[in-house]
Length: 280
Image (tube, rainbow, N blue to C red; front, side, top):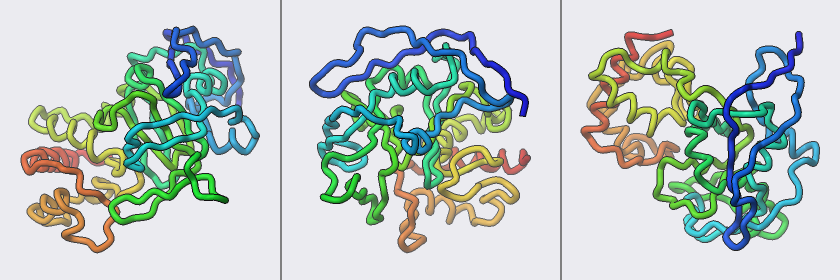
């Protein structure tokens, strides 16, 4: 493949990272990277598993997270400041945070994303192991809705961020970090019908991390629109009830109860109905 030298001439990006006791680079500084060679057409990916295999994710510090939203208790992790990691291993010199999103790719198909500008407003760390793990293990097991899940290989954590702030993503089982234009998939997913916009915004907030529409989104749960829309083979009333309480329909279901209100479910179904007429 032809290789090209890429420099993205956008505004400089920043992250301030520290742990609960010691400040690490609170004064924001410019990220300076050498120009690198990457294959033509390649995206802005950081393969965390590959970096670990090469012995590049070292010199960690202990970071304490009070009221961890995944473990639901105070936790300590061996972690790296995310800003330093991005500066060292990203293929960009400058990034316009206002026009960029970060997509977190997890081994289990979970695929949350958030505006880079939001990420930069916090003190973020990449946890590479769990200080509180049982002897002989790198991580304590996660128990979620009765299911045992693994945090490894990596977990994105924050210092000083409330677990109740849903705008911040805490992906565990993390393997890659991907940068993309903020409105990358708007043409494929944003409805042109204003009556479906509320449902789109709710779907993006609650559903897209696990489910894809037209092959765009998470892979933890099933694709909902292609080749056949979920509303074409589910009874609408059952679908409404399932979204609100999945465990009432399926034993040992992995989909959690998300606390979506009945009126919000109705809006989401309006969006799914719209998208059923706009397949790839």
